[in-house]
Length: 480
Image (cartoon, rainbow, N blue to C red; front, top):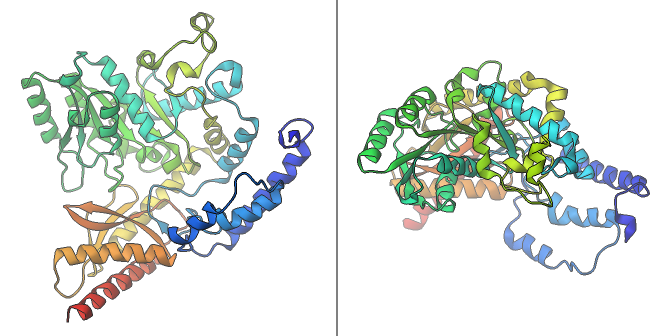
């Protein structure tokens, strides 16, 4: 069994095995003609359940053959131009190369004596991101597993910096379109979901600063403490960007921690044309960025940034075997001192490889392309009588609803849109997402693939309409 350990004696075995795997995936990518096969759980689950994990195949080639049947054939392929569903991006090759390197070397980014140069690369990328945001010379941060963890850590720091230790009095303010991880974080931090005050949004799904001001004033008058305001720079459903300068002013007035959830909108930090959409983010106390959304990085690649590195002490615990206090005195750079995680992958390498190969403008130009595409898609939807589109996009998301020509109930239209999404997924022709707006069912395009064209969007809209019309026609027959 030692022949499977990666070391100096098995380097050639490693090269052959990985090369075979890469070649198979490359062939699969080249041959993929639709984003999904349409396989159902009832078909795939018995195949996977029937595999005896106590009877190994012993050979990587045989395992790859089996993997074709249990994963590769039926995977949802985000690189396909008609994958239009969630915040999943196609990935750039330099980052995938970085993934191969970091997996093989397997550095753990908790302490210097486990990662050395990896620690310094991550720190340099944190500094680079903080500079792009404009957080100032005292800024710092750490890579995380994703936006949910970044939001949790930010609110942990805000809780510890609050003017009271009475958790029952603490309040967090976020728009009604904010990410669910805000409520989840409040629950995990002992405040309860009710501690999150939902602030109404305007027609463009942006937090209303007038509503925020009233909520903050009410909070103080009731004897509670405005712990934090979470502004969203790129909401999951609409891609909307809250008015950051106005929110910053209110946070300063009420002494609230300002957190900006830019998990989606962080791509604007590299945009050659749209950086101004993030004006005001430089006043945040903490910022969430998800490079695996709009920097075209493989999952996972995320970070939390803070204006004042001293606030990261709230996540610091010292263990004699790992990061003893003397390490601080000796100025040893241990990233575990800043992180909620201990063992942690060298995910920063993927972004490093990307920047060193493509540059920031290269990444930002790709994000600009999908934002431009969303604008073209919005014009298409706005001119199509079959559809109602909710808002003009700020980033690359379109939320819309099929509306039949003949009059029918809103509930029936809801069911038609739900059916169309499900039928489209089952066909494998395209993958779209769904959400609710105003209590009604809507469909959603999240455009993160520069290879997607306006023709792709038009074709998918025709497919959706066809499925919805089929559903309504069949129901009409059954009712008559």
